[in-house]
Amino acid sequence: MKFSVSDISGLPVITASAGQTVTLNEFGGYTQVGNGLASTSTTTGALRVIGGVGITGAVYVAGNTNVSSSTASTSTSTGALVVSGGAGIGGTINVGGNVRVGSNTFTKSGFALGDVLLDNGATDTPAVLFYWGNNRNIGIDTFYPGTGTTKFRIVKELNESGGAELWSVDRNGIVTQTAWDVGETVNTRMYDYNELNMSATTTIGITSFVRIANITYTPKSSSSYIWIEFNANYDFNNGTTVDDFWSNITVNGTEIAAINQRFLNASGGGTRSGVLFPISARYTNSSTAGIAITVSAKRGTADDDLRVFGSSTSGYMRIQEIGR
Image (cartoon, rainbow, N blue to C red; front, side, top):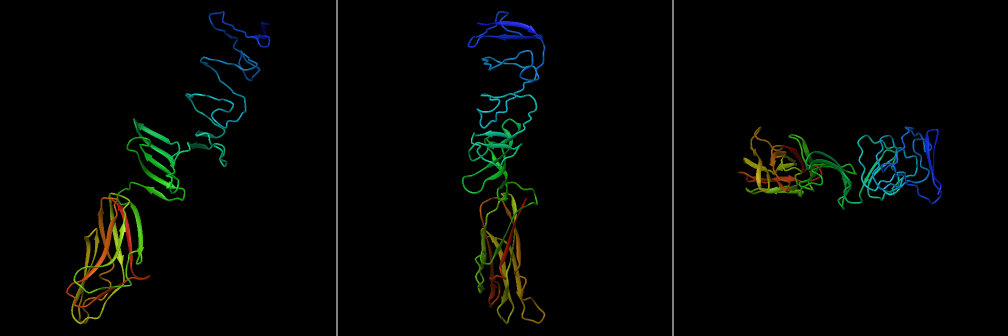
């Protein structure tokens, strides 16, 4: 075995023959190199090791640590620096390439320098969680439900009991939210005569209500107002005496609006159109279950018929849901 210690330029040099082991533990159980020389490369510094170093205990470095290898990382077990366990970092991290978190299946192309890639191969990606108390958070992730479209979402108490999606936008740009301010438009729908199940002509000749149009609307909010508007052309089919008719709107069988029109058989008296319809009403909603909306009309004291028409120019309904 060859062993030498020299003090050339203040630098200790330890050499050993190939295959030999040198152990320095004679002085208090440790080896100290303390001449204070800084390191600016792999060939400068107080201690230089030509070859690998295996250490089974903890290592504490008071100065900077530089890894000069340019080996790229393609998984958690490759790269210039590989850490099998966790890493605790008390300061800022600056990354010149990509940051990849989650599964080791990143074979995709199209990402650029500075991108942060989150993927765990499951229906929801690793989330960014913002905590302000124990088990209280707002989380951001992307979610694929298995059917439909992948969406970017905001979730309250993500991965916690009682968690629920608050807002999302899918990859087609459709926005979904679950809460609305007072007066905010929740949803608007328009229906034509065909969607309202209207007949080309509905003849009303009895004193009980006859259905003209109906639709089932499913509210998005459980605390909202439903504004309903309906319009259609109609006429009074002849007649020689005073007649009157009623129109109304019902929700789940309960009347929420009613209009009465009285036809007078006298010069300058009464009206012949534009009173029974359009008709509108407000319904106070407290559920997300579907509601049945029906528009009807009936005779009052009439002895003649009323006709209501459904066509491409007659028979429309607008439903607007508003937060309350």
